[in-house]
Image 1: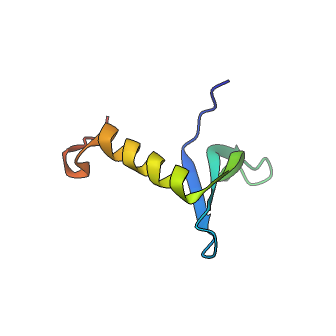
Image 2: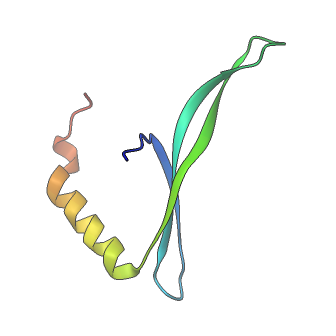
Length: 74
């Protein structure tokens, strides 16, 4: 099943080199009493990757997206 995410955070375990990535989805939330809109980040998924897997993912993402300077916002 696919999940849409538009945010993430990560942390690195210095001892093992593994990384934890938390994926989130931003959602507008309107407070009824004040009619003020806030953006809430809802957790979607969290993963733990060993160092070699994280480095492989990094390499693939660099290959897919190429030179970051040539990317255009769509």
